[in-house]
Amino acid sequence: MAMNAPSLPLPAPGPATLAVERVDALFDAAFGQRLNPMRHLGALGFLFFWICCASGIWIYVGFDTSATGARESLAAMDRNDWPLGAFARALHRYSADALVLVTALHLARELSRRHYAAFRRFTWLTGLVVLVVMFAAGIGGYWLPWDQLAQWSLTATTEWFDALPVFDGALTRNVIAGDQVSDRFFSLLIFLHIGLPLAMLGAMWAHVQRVSPARTHPPGALAWGSAATLALLALAKPLSLMPPADLAFLPARIPLDWFYLFPHAAMAWLGPDGLWVALAAFLVTLAALPYATRVPRAPAARVSLDNCNGCARCFADCPYDAVVMVPRTDARPHPRQAQVDAALCAGCGICTGACPSSTPFRRGETLTTGIDMPSAAIGALRESLESRTAALAGAPRVVVFGCRWGAPSRVLEDGSTAAIEFLCAAMAPPSFVEYALRAGADGVLVAGCRDGDCEFRTGTAIVAERLAAARMPALRASVPPARVRFVHAGRTDLGALRAHLEDFRAALARLGPRAADHPPPPKRQERHHG
Image 1 (cartoon, rainbow, N blue to C red):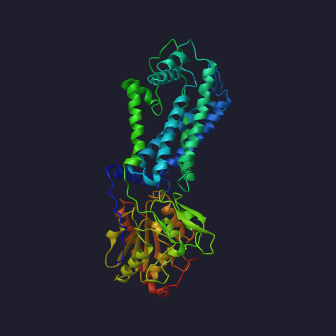
Image 2 (tube, rainbow, N blue to C red; image 1 turned 180 degrees about the vertical axis):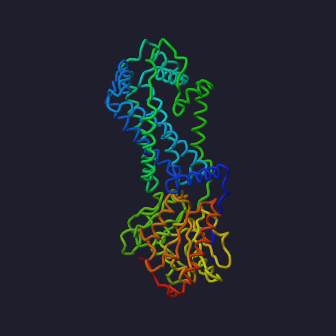
Image 3 (spheres, helix red, strand yellow; image 1 turned 90 degrees about the vertical axis):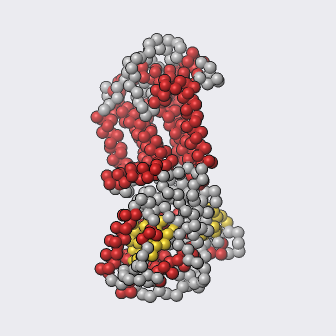
């Protein structure tokens, strides 16, 4: 029996997922899909981190590292006695706040889409480490001006840690019970504020180790626009210091930075013990999600050594480094072969679309490729394409290559439209497009997820590059470009996909039947490994 859809059903999008997609749609309208900041939250986090580090280095050069001179050196910066001091201070604060904002949105977005289990487990857990270290570094930064805000934050933090049995009140007695904080202790605070961001950078590095390629740079226009926004905010609203810290005096009113210092306000409500319980419950719950939740994914890819020539295209295109190249284990002359780590495999099929053996023009009852998906074998998809294309009637005849995670393309099927659903749009080899045209289709519509919003990170970009002949395997130049169209359509974009299809039909109708510009289908090759 010809197979059309993968055997593993997807759950219906939950309220959180639908809410995220509605927000995405609003930002798409404002920024366009490619520059939608909601799709580049992780990359924006890296950008804001580097801006914060660069401005912090400039501040440190002009900073007096003694407890008695710290506030006055920052006051001199606010007067611009140190070049660009006021601007650098404000930019440092606002970039740190922006880092918290995009990190929180990134966490909520990935949580709503259930991107935390299976092959994403390591990335999720290392992201929690980044979250903890980020807040530790940020809160510690508020202590360095040693004004009344620093005094209040340090007092609240020591009281919080004193609730732990290991300290039992020692921190408050030894740190802030004297007449003033010593220079030695102040040097420790500075060391922590430098060391914690370095530790955070290490956690960020680990966070992206199992994604390939890691998106650590937002698109140029978005990066420059975000940096310019922070710069304008820093110029328009510079910072101001509170009066110097006085350990004999407790300030009555504090201007709170809710991005970082909300735990202090929460402790006033919950108490130190309550805050520890709330924090532990929050982190344990998030850390347990990858182990307590099952998320749908197709079975891992499998390698067929008889059809693998070690070209490494699957290795290059795998978005999660699940494919590695190892020395050959059979007698074939190729030096390498692909090997799949099932624990890391996302079940996306992008590797199948990259394999040169996936060409449908090969002769044989069953098409077997070098790396294939058990739940959606490329041979069964070829059979489905052949039978469905042959059954098309009317004009123009269109084949839609859809994505399991995108708009439901199967509902578009009618007498003149056939829909073949892949695990990811990038699972469809470009040769399948040519094969569909030679099998009788007048046009092929390839539908991927929204731009920058592929379930497997890079699938939509990969298929676009293959169709544009910018990536191997590439669509051959002999295929008429007017008969192939690539569009973006997310799970909730069925209406948009219908509109794309009707527009494509109109364009094909103006071109006329396929036979007018395309030769008849050739015989399949007996064997193809190259």
